[in-house]
Length: 246
Image (spheres, rainbow, N blue to C red):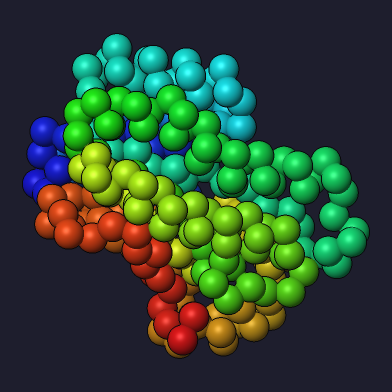
C-alpha cells in the first residue's frame, strides 16, 4: 500500500499505459480520477478500480480547467498528477506530416503538460507537496526515423520535466518522467505502421530484453516514482525500456 491515502489524477487513463498506472495506483491504496477523452472508457476503468471518472481533452484549456475543478471538489486535494495522455502521427517522412497532424501531436503531448501545470501547480505550491509524473518515451532519447515530430514532442516533455523539477523543488513538489519503449497498447500499430509478425520481430530485435513493455510495467515504475519511497528523486526521466536505449 505504497500510496495509501493519496489522491491521483491519471490522464489518458482509459487504456494502455494510463490504465496500467491507474490500476496500479488503486491497488496501492490511492483514490484515482481516471481522465480520458473517451468518457465511456474512463467510466469503465473507474468503476473497476472504485475510482472516479472524468472526460477531458487535455489539449483544451477550458476542459483541463474543468478537470482540475472537478478533481479538487471530489477529493479536496490532489497528491499526484500523471500526464499520460498522448498520441502520435503515423510513420512517414517528416515533410509529409500535415500541419494538422503536427499541431495535434504537439497539443496533446506537449501543450497538455503546460495546461495541467497552469491549473494544478498553484494547488501543489499552496500545499508545499505533490508529485507530477510525465509519461514521455524512449523516442525522446533515441529517436526512430519517420516519427520525427512525435520524437520531438517527447523530447520536449523530458526537458519540461527537468525544468519543472528545478523550479518546483523549493515548493516541495517533485517532477519525474518515465520513458517507455513501445508496448502492448492501442498506439503500437501506429508506431510500427502495420502490425504483422514481421514488423513485430523487427521491432523486438531492438529491445535487449526481447519483449514489448506492458501497462503493468509502467504502473510499477509510476507507483515507485510517485510514492514517498522516491522522496529524494526529482528531475529523473526513467527508461522503462528493456534496454532499448543502451
